[in-house]
Image (cartoon, rainbow, N blue to C red; front, side, top):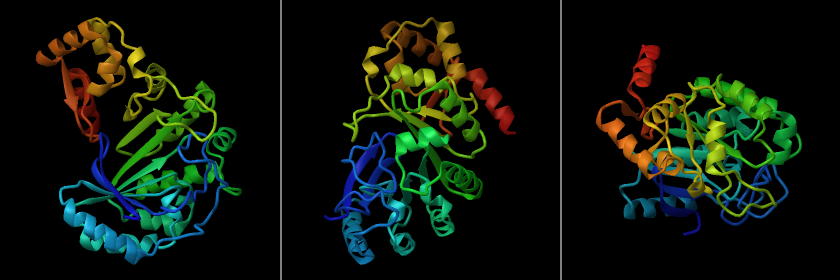
Length: 314
């Protein structure tokens, strides 16, 4: 198939059929340092497009073979919102998708356009990337097309998070020595605290990047997670170099760690050594550690923490 790929299984979004809206070449308004695609001059519009009928024919055939998927994901070799027929495509997908959810993975830049803003409001799920919020770091890591400004993007993301009725996710990809400074994290934290979203995924480079840059270890990502406001729904999405940071924690240290930042079971298996995992099991069995799944992924946290969160929400 030309445009449809998968199904792909994801810890974050379930089982998905992907639609590549730029299958022939990279067409993006960014040229990110960490991109897994080859470097390319950023563009503000697609030069080569696939017609909607072709996409829908291929999607209908794929849905017949894979009827149990969770999501139909709009993505691209580049930025999917540059696809000029996105409005009509979503209209056609909505007509045949049934209970399957729609999801788009976008770098957020085109939210400044009112038409794109309103089109994305119609999707069931939206994942926005926001790697940096200060102009210097934004230009350095995302290498945008001329005229794209991070202040207008942040303003659009803030407005979108207030207007959107579906499930909104944020993603930050950290690159060593680029956007991982305390100043940039503090600036990101200040912006994130003004947004309404279901989950914030932080990660790093998992595949060979376009440029000679380095990712962070899981331990470094865990430290960064602890620098964000504890009320933010932070999820560590990357597993790069995770095997090197298992340590021993007492029961009190486990409780204190999860009180500051709830973690998934995958996170804890990468952070805790074997004796610590046995202590964790005891805490779970005795009800001192419980799970919370409001963000779509099971997180473990102290029972008292969950009680405080419920009080805050009532």
